Image 1 (cartoon, rainbow, N blue to C red):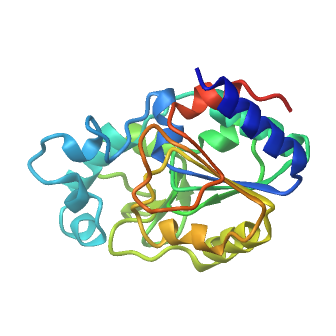
Image 2 (cartoon, rainbow, N blue to C red):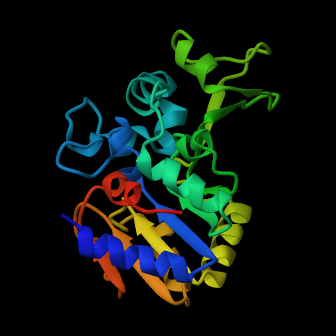
Length: 241
């Protein structure tokens, strides 16, 4: 299964030297991290408040304790390990084929796998800062804290993740868009392309090959040169660098 498509993908990669990978939640589901929008994703589970409410800026301010109950339980999966997709992308970067990764994920698994240039559009669970003094704390400190995590100065910590109602970091956006616009190949993986403004980043690609690897059809109509409907780890694992 996927043999011909993998051959075609391999041929495209062999021809290119400035590849950018744009990924979403589907890249990390094979590492045991739940996504948000699939049939069994976080948005389809039942809570007192909808997950979309909980991970909003206003909810964080008004119900910080409830936010952290959900955040620590459902979004901080600290024992997850990189899967075949993460590892292959790191190999491609090391070989000088892949320029950067643009990710909507906040789990840090690309860096754990060895990738160096990662544009984290939605931030990272591994960075948390005090809203009073600005001191940073790692994910383990937040995960192991009782109730709302606080700084030694007494200030409340906020995860360095982009919540609903918050804008993306301008420097991260600029860097990601610049790399996409200069790439000769863009691989889109594990994303339904429904979250804006990130989904609009694809419009900046003007290169040679556009590839989509996703279990389901992408919501945003993209004119892909190659589309593979399958698990991204299984597909990427078959590639040679």
